[in-house]
Length: 80
Image (tube, rainbow, N blue to C red; front, side, top):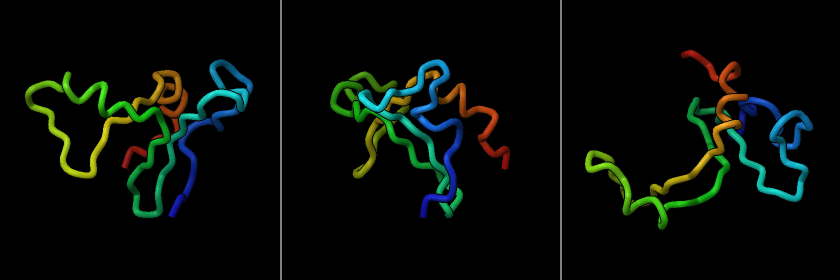
């Protein structure tokens, strides 16, 4: 199911990596080609502030991924 990590390991010592005591946000490519995000679940706090053209369907939630995680993963994100 999980194919490969996108970006550096969350415990990488460089920059904003987790030391193991903090949360470990992560991005994974799945065998299906979709992506799984490990981040802070923030649906209750953020859903009331969604723009008027954004909706959550049943089973969906809002996960916050720290900016540095996505920036470090940028070069590893497949283009197709």
